[in-house]
Image (cartoon, rainbow, N blue to C red; front, side, top):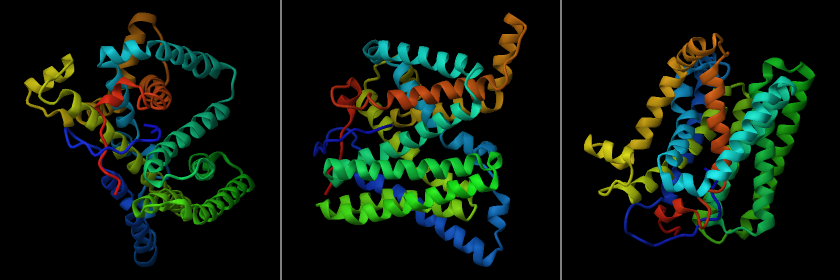
Amino acid sequence: MVAQTLPVSGQSAGMAVSFRFLLSLYGIVPICLIALGLDSWLFDHALRDALPSSPSHFLLFQVLFGTPHIVASNLLLVSHADYLKTFQRKLLGMSAFIVLFFGVGSLFIPYRVLYLISACWTVYHVLKQQHGIAKAVCRLPVWAFYLQLWLSVTAGIFTYIGIFMKNSLAPEQAALILQIATALTAALLAATWICQRHVASRLGWYFLWANTLLVVASWFVYCQQYYFLAILMPRLVHDITAYSFYATHDVNRHAGHPQNALFRLTEACRLPAVAVLPLLSFALTYWLQVHGDAAVNLILQTLFSTQVYKAATLGIVGYLALMHYYTEAFIWSAGSPLRRYIRFGRAS
């Protein structure tokens, strides 16, 4: 979810998104830093050696982080006919673009170029969400908001590249990536020190520094080669934040009066509205990761006598991720039908 500037509401009816709860998610940062310190000082890096070199190599990570909230976001749209009707032109247009650029285009565009585009979009999406939410309580001037955002995003991009492309980079390239990430992270710290004077509330000050320290901590653990932890921290903060919006929407729209077939079915099964998207998205993610490729290729082999490499885990999940990055930029903005079901707790 990429949040726009969010109005703070004092409404008590229904479920509300709590800014203090969202801030508490950043607690993963000191936990990971403490784990790194203990592992380095007491256990001779046993934890680092036991973790996979890349989070994408760890099935449990794939099932728990990243993909589930992407699946949930897409389910939220396609399970509501009124949302599909409202956004159908945008959805069809973006679907065509993804097929042409990332599908057909992959025949001509180098894989590394496509990967870098996806990586930049991923980092921008994750950090834009966190800064967009913080903007509601930080109330930074426009120039300060975008300074913080773009320094965070650029520092995050180089950290991300350093982690996920480390095996394909020459030593001098890896060193250059690290140097750039370090310089941008230092610039972000300096900018935050300058911008904090424009934050009026204590909660806003906490959010400002929480977003900065999220990037700084990811850079630091990347430098220490704890690649799993470097990705875990922003992923956990981002994903749970997104689910808090999805759950709030579902409770306020469907609890006690389900308005589509999915929630009528789950209510009949006595499943509370708040749990529908999380449980369904985790189940679908597990199926896609474990059985998706085989199932899709069975269909392709039966109908067309052909198979596609990672048809589900790369093709379908990749499509859903790109659609998620695109749609979350506008479905929660002012005037969107989804925003009618979102309320916010007080920011004081």
